[in-house]
Image (cartoon, rainbow, N blue to C red; front, side):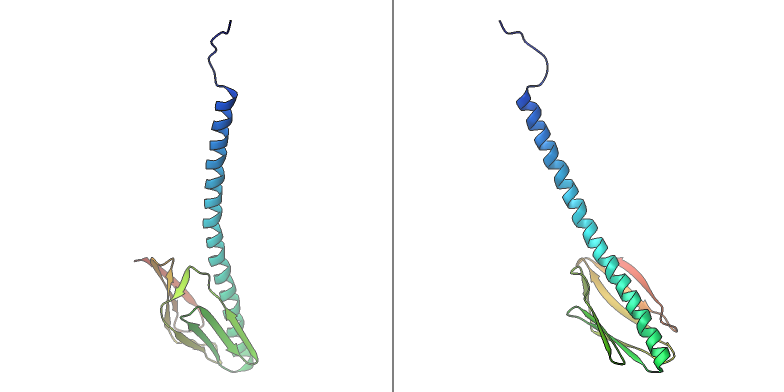
Amino acid sequence: MMRYRNGFTLIETTIVLVISAMILSLSLYMNQHVNLDHFKDFFFWEKFQNQFELAEDAAINNNSSVAVTFHRHGLVIMKYRNKKVILRPPENLTLLTNKRIEIKNNGYIAPYPVRWLVDKHAVLDQNFQLGWGKYTFHYERT
């Protein structure tokens, strides 16, 4: 004679574990995907900052101006002496207009705004400051 027992069967426990594992793996995958986009942005801006400082130093040391061109189709090009550096922004960053700035031979940059569209729903203003090659960011949601 079978007795009635309180508790879960092996099949019920297995089903709950499989569903829990699927939910956990899906949430980890989504979190990893979001963080990957964040790192792509971070590495692009780090690389931009490093190349911009090198271009600025080259302008001063070589006593010649450096052109920095922002292309709407997704390239940032820095040309100085015999060097041409091309940076590609991540897919979620899009330039709104073509821009060209010039770093003078003394490091001076005229004030200039460059507008980026981020994830197709926010605008990032990159403002080159009056004077010595510094820039700031202003972020606004659209």
